[in-house]
Image (tube, rainbow, N blue to C red; front, side):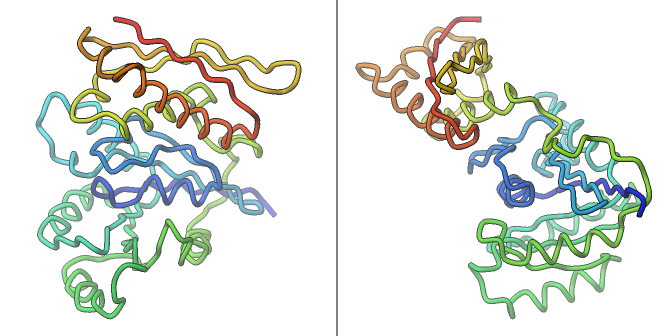
Length: 280
């Protein structure tokens, strides 16, 4: 049997659950999950190998930026469209609890321009009555040529395997792009940077996390197989340092402990994390 491949863009409004879905499919945390807007800023690729088929999942920024003219969101828009244009098929993920048909129709109208097959995936199905979706699906189906509809819960793994089985039907004969043991296009340091950024988004408010640069300067496996990691939080305004440190250093301590725990889980080893705040 020859190798096959399929490139799939996961698209949807901010907080639809795109990162949760891709992490569930891959089986590892490669994309950060947070309720704050624009948490996914890079185009992260998740790699899922099933027998002779390699499926690439592009975790894109929120589709809110499909038509954005805001200069500050230019890179987000570029990454979003890159994922769509490079893909063979589009999974458009919808938060079933907060469906806005007007917004959805507007988004689908824009995506239609690239002439890709679109699978509409209703996420968080465990939080609503399934029967409430039927009239909504009919309205969408009457207006657009959607390839198929799926109901899932990415968080609780409901319907995800059925979705994967369906995607296999669209794979085509091709050499694999990534090696069998790779799960993402990003290296370990990128993922560690993202884990710290996720924690900063959780603990800090408003605009601060979006004005920080994270840099993993040290990654060292010790003789006892523990891992020593040093990360720099690079700030562009001096006033941020006091906020990140918190009263008597309590905030930075909580951030460090939370990040260290996440890293230990991902790396399957005890992590010793050291954080430094520096001005750019």
